Image (cartoon, protein in one colour):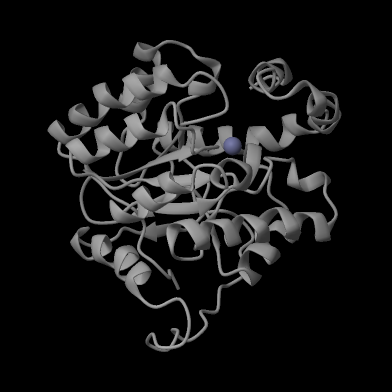
Length: 289
Ligand code: ZN
């Protein structure tokens, strides 16, 4: 991934923040290549050095929980909260999931966007498949209905920061604010605090892992990057998913951040093909320990 490609992606963002982000991006090429290493490991069949996550069981029980949560009274009388979960501080993000047979995870970043996310949700519902959405707080706050729909339909919502900054250039307190505000909006709209986070541009550092753990979240990267944000054409996106398909693979796509109609169309094409090939499309189990 070249710096120019990153700029292309950012060109759709507001001009006011562009200059600042370009300055930040001067240092992103090295961190972006970390994602490429994961892709190469998957493509060549090498075992990634990072641990794999266990896949979730049958999705049925997942459907009930978020809705049940929202039916509880907001104050006072509900059942006692679960004991606080202790999240380990990781040194690297998860790249893949483990699981019996042909298991894959589909992830969609940067949304939700009312122009594209509903179509993605429609396709997932048509095939009765659960996926992960790493949302940005600034998008989620204006589209809380879409987070509620994700909860109702059993999808997992993860934290992708508030404004999609390069975390490695932030102070610890700004990094915390980016992550914490986003978890707050997710809790309001989705009904639960997120248990997964993903650093923008795949740029992680020690503080990001520490803060993620403090906020009860596990870091998830990806093993196949569709590069759909470069709008390479629907067929190219479909080809990248099909060529990268393998047990445990985590696929990165986007439902916001620009025109994502190719990503929407590609899903309609590759999802039934993956299912026909015997893949079980799932989400990671909660509270991996
Ligand atoms: Zn992103």
